[in-house]
Image (cartoon, rainbow, N blue to C red; front, side, top):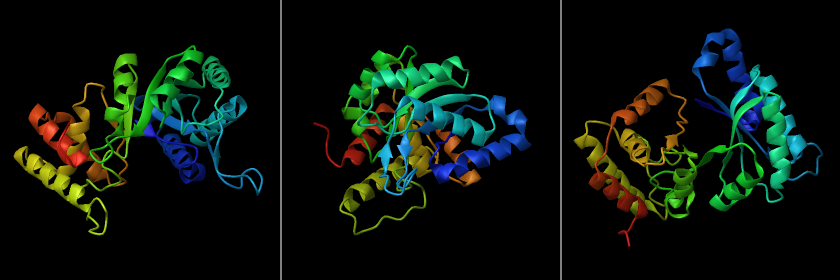
Length: 261
């Protein structure tokens, strides 16, 4: 799976992937291609335009067609709304999704960074299922465990995708910890706990952190952001690591920085 968005590099990420597909078209059937839309940059299209979100139907369709052109493909497997638009009209989004689906330009739809209530609101208007909610989840970002996000994913069979599953690299194997951070103590304790569990399984800290996410029954899919091929290959080993329930809760407690209630 390749996770992209129209704003990544101002469209450059989609162009680079498109170049690779044009050189090696045999890769396309082997991948799930995902992209996102809805964030509009400051100064576009007019100089005084603010940074904002836009889920208007025409803009969603226009954004999707732009992504298709940059990647040089006929269809996007998974198309997500990037961040909630405070002016979202669910019926208008449903209209855009229906147009894209009917035209064969998108196979499946989802959202990113949506609260459960926003997912429910949009799903009631959409004739097709929302299949993904991409949110930040890691041992240092535990909100989805308590705010109903993962409960809804289980209930509605929505796949939770975790962006920044290693907390922006803070849980990676070689990342330093800034002692001036207010959360230095919590992060230090968590990394020591992770290292101990990783050693007991003859693996690395980052693999253990990813395996922790994979154990959840909602089927969390971590999005690996590394540009290092060796790190990506190493991360895949998390799929073979089965943490015990006690180990899982030991890490949860360390990530919270306090005992469970």
